[in-house]
Length: 262
Image 1 (tube, rainbow, N blue to C red):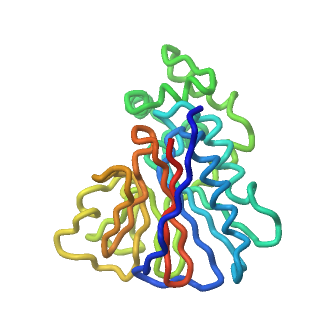
Image 2 (spheres, helix red, strand yellow):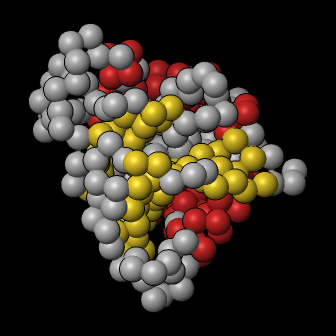
């Protein structure tokens, strides 16, 4: 594995305040880069025991799998979460969000993945994931699914099963891809929050909600830097092709970015 460096950005003013005793962390699209995720989780854990921190929420923004070289290790790290790197003095809640790639894996484990979806998955980076779980891409669809289910460690299967489309903390909403500004906030189907792009990234009629969205899914230039807009913060810095994995820390009215690079 390459040498990994960790960098902490300066503390910036947040678009919306969070509770002062609550440290919120979120991690962008990993795509199998466990070599970046592990040192990033270690770096985040060092800040958990800071003065005045009484609770921590860590959110994986989805797309843990596919394309990258260490998918199995990535899923194992996500299953353990930030809590695995922290002592028990401060309670840590880990939340795993569904990305569009994770939806395929979850459906396969639940035996609800259709053959046409399997083919779409295969053409979107599934081969790296399947390889890590000893799946032959040339097998029949039913054998691919059976092998995935059989070779998936129980702790990982349980973590995938509890993946959710969205998580909200006060005026902050965390999703993989974004929200549709043309629909009510309470009516955002899984397909939208895991796939949407343009209508969310650049809403034509302004942003109708009071919340700020932290998301991934769509790397934006300059790719190695997170994107900050009035209504959203994008943490997808294209780890699988830039070698930069980005997290955000939010506390009170301040936020900063932490990156693992290599």
